[in-house]
Length: 92
Image (cartoon, rainbow, N blue to C red; front, side):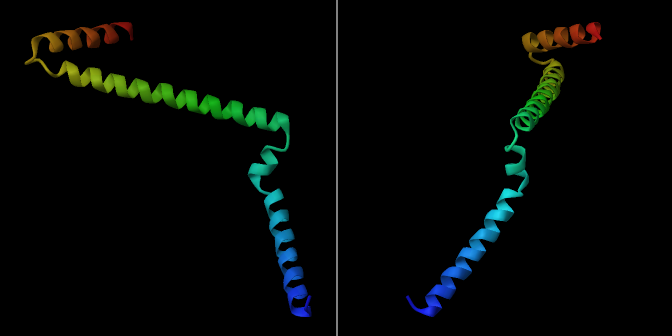
């Protein structure tokens, strides 16, 4: 092997070592290095996802019901939506 290819290989290994050290200090690796830290992270993630899903579904359903209650020219849908809105207001 020539001196130039040995120097290039040493340089490549040094760069690879630096990248590996940088990767080992990355947040993703540090969170997943501890079982308890990983469990708490996943638990908090699940809580946030669940809360977001509930809030999003509530807003979507209430908007759809309000919109459906505004349609009074279709008697069946308009009456049904008005009853839903009335029931929701009564439970508040």
